Structure formats: C-alpha cells, structure tokens
Image (cartoon, rainbow, N blue to C red; front, side):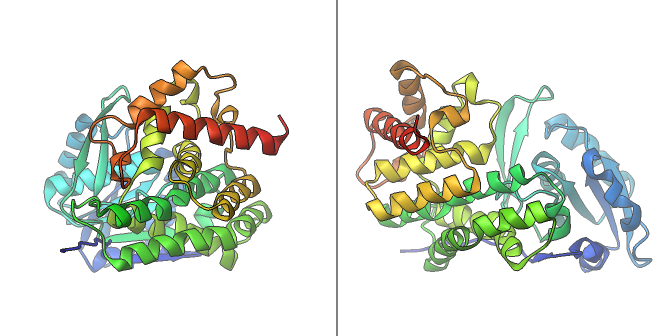
Length: 362
C-alpha cells in the first residue's frame, strides 16, 4: 500500500511571530504582495518598513474569494513584480492569497489572524461568487510555503473564534481513524501514513488536556503554554490531520446541516462539533469516549444539542434532509467502514440531541 502525507513547507508560531514576516519572506523573494483583510490592516504599519532587504506592497482584500477578486489581485501582483504572495487575515483572504500565488506560480506565506479553522496549512482554496455563494473547490498542487501564526494576535480575537476552531479540530482524530479502519484515501486520494494518524490523535489529546485552560487564558488576555498548544492543535495538528489523515462523517453531517437555513448563523466548527458527536454515536464508540467528547464540548462552550445551532424543534423530515445530504454520493461519510444509510445518520443526530438536552436538563 502506498501512503501519502502532505505538509506546509514551514510552520512558525509564537508571541510576536508577525515581526518575522520580512525575514521569512526574503528567504523566498525580494518583493512580495501582501493581500490584507481590511479588518486587520492596522497590523501593516510596522510590517511594510520592517526590513530594507525585502519590499512589501499591500493590497486590500475585497471580501470574497471569487474568480474576479483573484484576477484583480493577480494583476496587481504582476504590476509590482511580486516574487511571493502573503495572505494576512481570515479564511477567505488566505484562500485568495493561495489562489493568486497558484495563478502566478509563486510561493505563498499564510498569516492567519484567527485560530478558528484548520484551513491555513492546506492546499485548498474555496471559491465563491462575487455575491458570496459557494462556487467550487480549487485543489492546489502544493501546500503553503510558510504558515506564520502570531499568538498575541490570536489572543486579541473574540474567544468564540478559538472555540469554533476547537470544534473543527475535535473531528480530526475520529475522522482519521475511520479512514484508517476502512483504508479510505485522504485529500490526496491515497491513504495517510501512521504519522498523519498519530498527529490526529495528538490533536485530540491536546484538546482534552488544554482546551479549558486556553479559554481561561483568552479571558485573562495572557499567552500561556496551554493557549499556544491549542492554537497549534487548531491550526497545524488539525490541518495535517484532516488533509493527510482524511475526512469522514463529522464534516459530511456538517454539510448536511447547512441545508437548514436556521443553522446558517453558526460557525463551521460549531456545526462540525455536532457532526463529531453524531459520528461518535454512529460508529458506536465506547461510553467513556462518548462522555469525554460531550464533557469537553460543555467545558469549552461548543454545541451539544440541536438547539445550540438554531434547531429548537426540528422535525424528522428536516433532519432526514440533513441525513440525506450527509450521505450524498461522493460525501466523505462513505469513508466509514461498512457503509452508512441516511436512516442511521438520522438516528445518530437524534441521539446526540437527546443526550445534549438531558445534560442541559431540558
């Protein structure tokens, strides 16, 4: 059997890491275009004059990772003779930077300002229309050359972003294990290595050990070792785990939940958390592991019942729509060994809701 595991070229994390951007950039090019999310444009003040050996030009991100925005920024990069692209901000700005770098055949440096998803390390951009509707996935031939994460910037974001990132990361080991047991392929189409599975498990162990302490650190506005470990788990370990370990039911159920408009105001990781709890029910994990996952979600403030994601009184017909979408042809839920039916998914979702409501006394 041939296994394949993919990684970003370099991962840099720590308090004040943003000060190393010029140093990391000049290893790759003497000129770079920074695509910056306007919400964090204040961070540019010191960056653009940080190092005389590298020329950094900024361009504001337009708000959507669309073909039109990618084309606009590609022309700007050509105009300033950029030898590298930098993405600074949230997920859509980062995906746009990856796509622009791909269009020009240039190296890319990703600087996330949130730890809310595991996308920064991946070889993937999600493309939308100019109005913000999903259009397609752009699979990239390589992962980012550098991912640079400044823990102090993450600290100053709202706590909910970090919690949502933990919801996304919680799925990593469970989904990688499903793929390992069934022999399913990861994002490369081939099975992941033992390294990928081990990192996925480390992601889970880190969440269990440090999640609650990281939340407290965010509230106290202190960069602590626990917070550093959770940022790494949300960003690097979860990123490596999903891309090289593989996906299964948690993300498929997340995708199913999006067919119900009531869930649209909730974040990706929050819905993935419900998907993970349903996956645990669906694959009949031991009671101890089930309780551990529910306890963790309660401790850090992740959803544990359907009301927590806007579904106060969903009908069986609504939930069957979710289950059917989760089981659509090509969905990752089919990476579960033995196969899954919509009826089984419906039962698992209802079991999560019942357990979550029981725990809340409702």
